[in-house]
Image 1 (tube, rainbow, N blue to C red):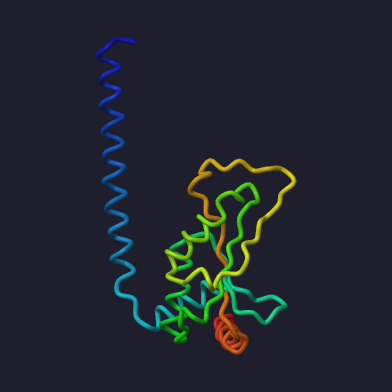
Image 2: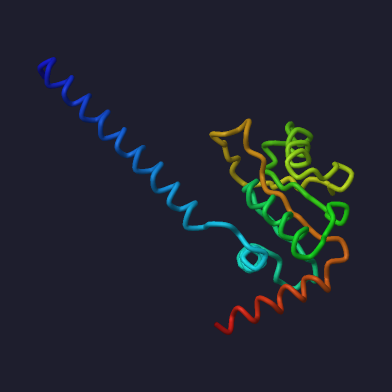
Length: 171
């Protein structure tokens, strides 16, 4: 191809990229504005929806939540604190991570401890997940597995939350 044609194609691609980034910034700002200020009621309902989707609802009576998204973990802990007055001392945390990360267990535990502000003394033994095929993670050094957040003696609260979720199911 001719030099001028290549330069024009490059400029067109750069302009298309710039416009996409500009549109993305606009849409993100619009989304934040759409969400607006979150009321206590909003927080309550958001937490219920999160627990409905990701919380423990099975056969055990444990009140628990497991996820790999740090923001979601922090939201859940914040929700427990603000809505149900659960103190961080009432939390029990456990990391689950692929056994290929055995050499990083302490680093991963410290990551979750720093993120949540919950001391390592409230962590139970990390669960190492063994798989038939060793998975190679592209983000080997920044993969932190999942974190389980449980509430000590949380059976009554779990039942209360599930009652609220039952009410949502009537809509």
